[in-house]
Length: 149
Image 1 (cartoon, rainbow, N blue to C red):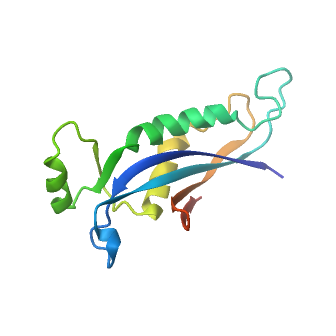
Image 2 (cartoon, rainbow, N blue to C red):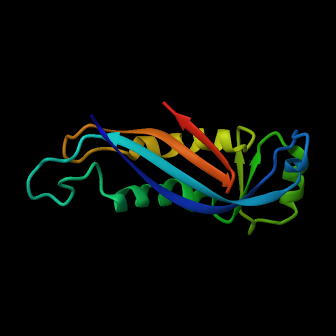
């Protein structure tokens, strides 16, 4: 039976859901938690740093930081067809971090996006089976979306 590990990174990110029936249509932000779920076999090569692990947690952290945190932390993510919001953000000037996405930035869509951002980088250095199987995105303490393959 394979082993599963999880590692997460948190971001402070603004968004809006432009066609939402309630208050999420307004510009607001969240403390998002992107949690990678990785499955595989333990490294069995004697004497290597990752012996007894799937992958070093710090290696997963580095990937999460580079491809998720550093991309969207302290920025505003916006659907690229949300013209009203884009016009408002453009008033902030070039120093504002606006990230335009080709999807509405719901937790469900961000879970898929996060999965796609890091999946190419979850690789074994020691020949053990290793794969990203899910990305969990917590938008609020009570709200969680999961993209799983």
